[in-house]
Image: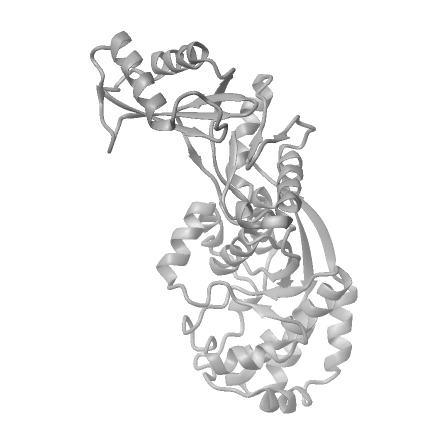
Length: 385
């Protein structure tokens, strides 16, 4: 039994979100499965061991609030009780207290929710006299949902990712470094329904094969949250980065590099029909990430630049990265292009007009941007589960 949260608030558009979620589950499973939409629930029959193993992948599917393995019975009291007794038998080790919680969407059921919970509680106490009722913090919570098609009985509610189904809020191009922040930014936008493609800027020989492999490994993890695959574009950035480094005053070079990345990412976004750019920038985290510099960087693009981490502190970002399982990959000691040629004292204040003037001093600037785009390598990266 798969439950969703926000989708239930979508009114007339709810069916579109439900269908998107259903298709995303099938794609994440990598096989055709028989899922039914039943009044704000998705029902997935577990028909074999393979489906049961795939069940664990539901925690990676945006749009799911929670999910449970459940017994399905008819709406008769005896059949529901039989399922409850079997569940208690299976879960009784270490259990001394319980609670029955009933929900009815089928209003013709002869008992109210509270009445039926009390009735089932009495029956449990008769069969398991060592158990006690605890309505606040039970060791075992037994859920019963009475619905038009039948009744569902379950004990565990596994927490889902929440949010909206990937693909329901457009498409974005995330500037993915090998660091901690940008993978978290990508995940946060996927959680809001944005389908993600990643663009990584490589500067060989200053960045090596290990740095490149680190980005692939990050994408293999992020692909779990993107229905099992993620498109990665690798941009050869060395020539343009060196030209910027030689031609722009040192303290402005980092902002100039970011503007060049944004220009390239926007052109890729146009080719790939992406609607927004996404970065892992965080206000005040480093000297270059000030409001003034963010404004200057954004002005290099004509499409929206989203910064989902802007209000988080570093420890919050690290905690999310650990949860996503990208943190240990991101801290591998291999430099990416964002960590080379970093000035000791970057400018904390810049303006679009100043950078536009400085960019005029970069030889063949537009040509180097076009050259970088024409030599992009594109990969469809599959998830590692």
